[in-house]
Image (cartoon, rainbow, N blue to C red; front, side):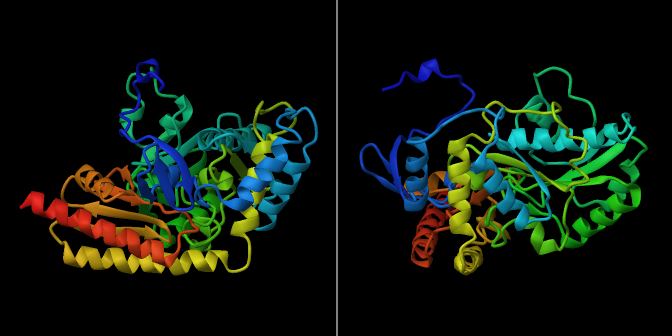
Length: 395
């Protein structure tokens, strides 16, 4: 057994030790089975040990793991082409994580204006309660001060405004503004969805002011909302978008997507990544797309999402002292509680079902996209029993 004291104390780890996974299930070392409605925080899009993903990674491990970006990469070229074929984008840069994808997105926007002879145009408007990663730049871009505290001066170049407040956005625009960065649905911030009219207004404002619109779809992308990417429901396309989590199905993969124009400043030598786009990651990404882009898969996500939504709304009606609101789209769902959200999450674990805490007293429900209707109903039943525990404890 690993000595936990050898690890950084930066996590309050739950005392569960998982040994293996099967689809929507996680199994501990002593054989206890948990319904995984956390999905590694929206990462395991195909659940655990998906046969196609396992097979494609096995094949790649026997051929090539790493060469670096000094050479051409067939796997990168294939995955990039598939992503650009189904999105607004013309260019893709591959990374190892969501934070790196956001770093690339921010650098792409700033470099665009530098290349146009406007080096002072580097500021980006962001939103309260946003989460864009844990690097020194992405915590500065985010909307939660606790992630910045103790790490020195905040990286400059970000102006934070109220989520959904168009007047505040307009007031924040200056001659230094390069773009607007927003999550179409805030995940860590409490499954708060931006109004589609608001996103359309941001697109119009960026067009009028010559700014770039940047979407962070790290948590909500790759089918989680029932669309391939969450922005599609609004009818608004960004200039730059960061994705990760689900695109690798559990393998560390991120990507920054951009239009030809927006990416025009990123010429040779301006950005790089030693591991980004390695052959193993590209095999995983292509395997995930094989499944997610298959006929009927996103329809399945929407069908199962309806089962979840109806079940959770029914629980809200039956437990009004505990549940305040059900939020989200597709399988990107949140239960906002009136009692402490940690109490309900602990009760859910007692019922062998996992979720994820978020801000605004929310529990995220993020099942694998491969979850069946039967598994969804099983999970709803377990959450019902957890709610009974919480309601009884609350009196």
